[in-house]
Length: 191
Image 1 (cartoon, helix red, strand yellow):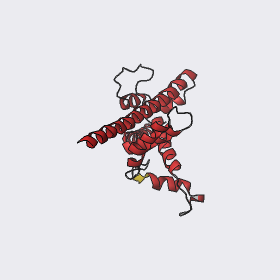
Image 2 (tube, rainbow, N blue to C red; image 1 turned 90 degrees about the vertical axis):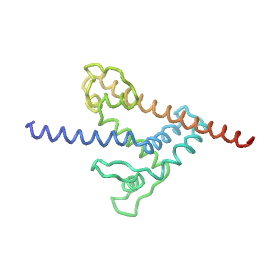
Image 3 (cartoon, rainbow, N blue to C red; image 1 turned 60 degrees about the vertical axis):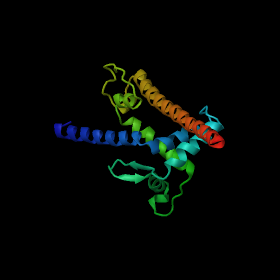
Image 4 (tube, rainbow, N blue to C red; image 1 turned 120 degrees about the horizontal axis):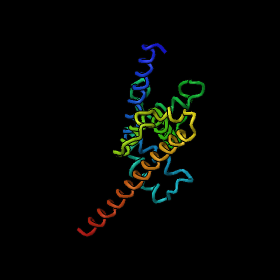
C-alpha cells in the first residue's frame, strides 16, 4: 500500500477510534446498554436489580441520549434508531421501541469496543496493568481477525469481560442509589 494511502487509512482508523472512545465514555449511552444487558434472560440479574437500573440509570439517560456518529457529528439515539428502523430508508416509516433503544445502545457499545485498542479497553476499566508485547497497542478488531484462534479468544474474552464489568458495576451503582434513597426516606420520616 502506498505511504499516503496507508497514512489516510491510519487516520481514518484513528478517527473511528476517537469516536468509539467518546461513545464508550458517554454515561447515558453506557447506562442504556447496561439496561439491555441486565434485563436479558440469562444475565443473572433479578427483578430488584432491573428495577434499580430502570429507575436510576435508564430513566435518567433517555433525554440526553446522544451519540457521536462515524461522521463525527452528534446524533440523538432516538434519531439513529429511527433511521435504522425505516422501511427502505423512507422517512416516517420507522418504529422505535424502548427495547429497540437499549438494544441499539448495546450494539453501539459493542461496535465501539471493536475499533479501539486493547490498551484503551484496560484504561476504560481503570486498569494500569502492563500489557504484553503481543497485545500492546493492538486494535481489538485485529485480534478478532487473527488467524490464531487463541488470539481471537483473547479478543472475545476482552470484549465480554469489559461488558460484564461495566454491567456489574452499573447495576451495583443503581442498587447503591436505591439504598441511599431508602436511608434518606427513613431519615426524613423521623426528622
